[in-house]
Image 1 (cartoon, one colour):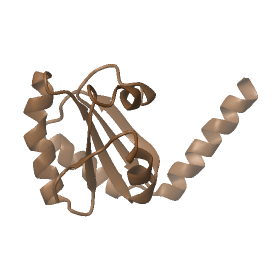
Image 2: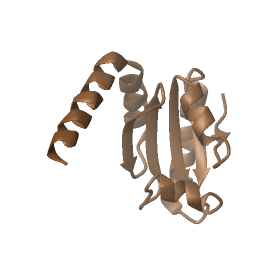
Image 3: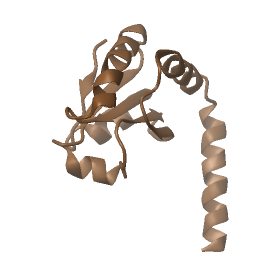
Image 4: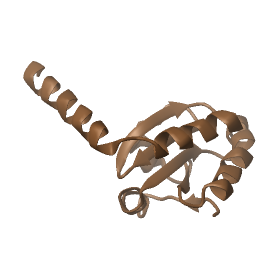
Length: 126
């Protein structure tokens, strides 16, 4: 499967409508972004069950701002609509493969439980 262009118009639909979504926030002028692109593309071919989306931060400045992107490339991973990973910097192929494996192996019931506990704790301290 090839990578998919994500925009303000389709971002939420893709993230909430797919089991696993990796999102690469990038720009054409960014050297590390260009270096990471082949790794990300290869991952999309190796994992056709995972949506690999790309957000051009120049064309989608509002989306980049909403995602709080401060450095590119930034990689985010969503599982069942939940953000489970976000990190700036280009990952080497082995690290990206490890990330995909970890995201696939997540117990989402446990993740949701932890998120609910964190929310409850922050509600009591706010």
